[in-house]
Length: 446
Ligand SMILES: [Fe+2]
Image: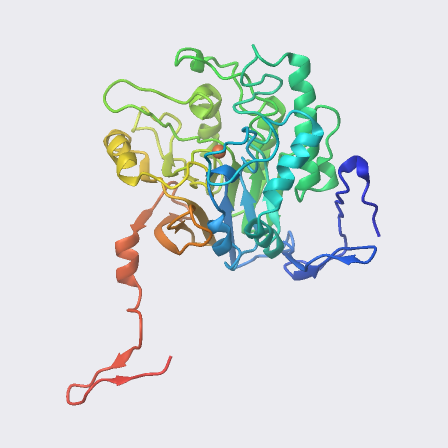
């Protein structure tokens, strides 16, 4: 029995204790005469266990106005231990009458009631509901849960939002986020703050280090010279120490970072001139180099990333401009559920293929919608790019467009297999025939 308090939007956050490890549970809620649909969850393996395998998905960036959640129709049918959501669960944008479907309200949300209504609009989607009902989720936020490109107490447009107004906005947005997300009570906001960076352990096989790269970060630099300032931080000093200590002492075979914005250098211009988005780790280069040098002391680090609305699979090295520095890890940036809309694939490759030719640490790029399924065992991590053919219709087909392998003990991306190679590897569709030299073909069962 728990109380749904109106001060928390009638949400409940039940921290159930005494469950068996590595077990599937079904649950529902009862309030008065109302009974909720049945949800399913799965507990983590015991901290001292040695799981053979861990299979999960990660996703990000689900702008409701950009299209339908066809990706979640398919994600909900996967066999997964959990879903990691890496940010941009809601978007704060005003309703757009020309969009595929519309946000509620009259403009951007600022008050608690407005953020609650925005979350309620997103949660009304049946495919999103199905994905939550099928798996436990590990969530963290990026910028759009509050305001585009916010940094600590600084809004996107300080000329238009006073510091007091933005602090009030952040408090409202955090509270609505907490109310609507599967977070433990340890993340209950206290004033301006919400504890979201945390660590989850899946026996000795993997640790998931969940980052918060908004609440403690320095404001984005404006130039490449300013981005070299060693004082700039993406995490704040406390979280950096927590991350470094946790990575080096996890005792886990794999160290997975649930992260928001791209670590790998991401030049946007072909030719000798360079152009960067300084909201990414490209804007916090000294801290990035320090952390990546530390990756050399970490067992199998793999960064999982959202934000980019594209798939970007990369080798990580402390200095991306010096290909002689060692590869220390891998980053898999996993497309988006809807943000960016149905893609212009040819236009994307016309722009980025020439830059890829100058960026040897980029191993695979794509701009279609979907999610990534990761299958981890002691030897390797296999990541499958699952793409839907449209988000501008209410249903879609899904396919595995590429697979990326990271081998344990060998930092970086070991191999990339694209769709044609994957199709060649699969058995042909339809009945299988047992062909004898002197007989007609006989269809076999199965
Ligand atoms: Fe996004």
